[in-house]
Amino acid sequence: MKNESNLRPRPYYVNEVVRIVNPKQMRFYVSKGIYPIDMYVSEDDWDNQIVVYIFLREETQDLYQKWINHDLG
Image (cartoon, rainbow, N blue to C red; front, side, top):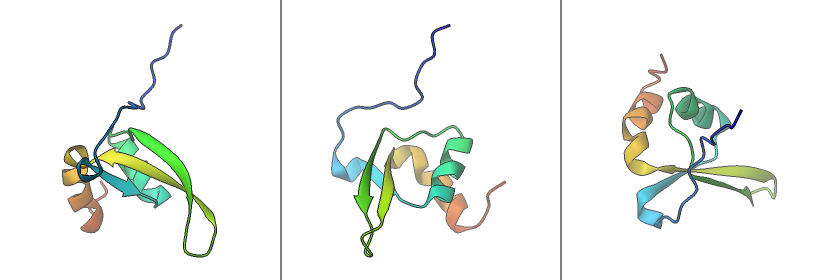
């Protein structure tokens, strides 16, 4: 059986994406069917490695509002 990837890697402009580093926020987006188009490893302010998830801004606008309003249902 052939499986298709949920990730949609493609070139993108900085102003059309958002970077998410909070794993709980990333899981919330994915649980609602919105998948990152890219991801990479970076470092936080304390030199710890973190994963940065790149999402399309237009796909996450409604979910971001729900996230900041704690409307996670």
